[in-house]
Amino acid sequence: MSVVYQINSQLREKLHAPFGVLIKGSLAKNKEKLEEIIRKHRPPILITVGDIVSRDLLDHNFNPKIIIIDNRCMREKIVPRNFPVSKVVHAINPPGTITEEAIRAIKDALKTNKRTEIIVDGEEDLLSLIAVLQAPEKALVIYGQPKEGFVVIKVTENKKREVKKILREMKPLRKTK
Image (cartoon, rainbow, N blue to C red; front, side):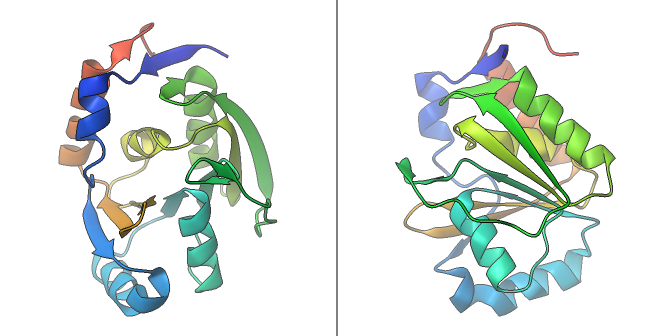
């Protein structure tokens, strides 16, 4: 495991704000709103980052291609769930970091047609940045916003530029390829 980026205190505060469109409340209350977003944008794939949002999307018949989880909710262990996936990948990614192993897992999942679950040993929160950076244009990356709802990010060139800027602000521990 090689740590590529580590968050700093200034960015930690900045990243508490939603990085996309915040939909307040539960998915159960906002299913139609998410369906409308999907109809409007016609994403080539959905990627979920977080245990609860991944479970909620599947429970409401949304089918993410990539599910990134850490079997935790609000940093507390939760009972693992078997997701309907073709492939399961494990990656080490300590809290507050982005590792080469996690980046590779996301890149590899995007290269295959298989629905993939990435189980993170550590913390998956920052991996939504890598998902946006690596996903194709128009993909949707959805993550949970604790105690508020969930955030939907439409992948665009502008969002990719924002991610690159954030990664430059992080304490890079080594250059990525």
